[in-house]
Image (cartoon, rainbow, N blue to C red):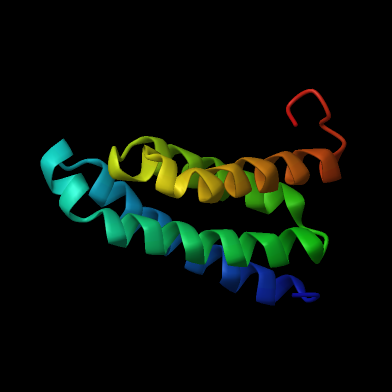
Length: 108
């Protein structure tokens, strides 16, 4: 993730995952709850990629995707239960780290 073209490909991939997540988020609450595992898996992929991007020196590029992760997690009743609390906190912390790496301490 040191080359600009590699980062561009990764951001394109993240955009595709985000588009799929958007489609799920636009469904009814019943359908979103039945497909919660897709949302969860999408957030795992985004989190892992964004963590590596941030560590490679591209925190600005990760913020929109990490914020989307939080939106997805908050938009699904199953993923707001105590069982997924640790996962939600990890996403909040990663978003805060990205803001902190950019020097946006108020946002963090």
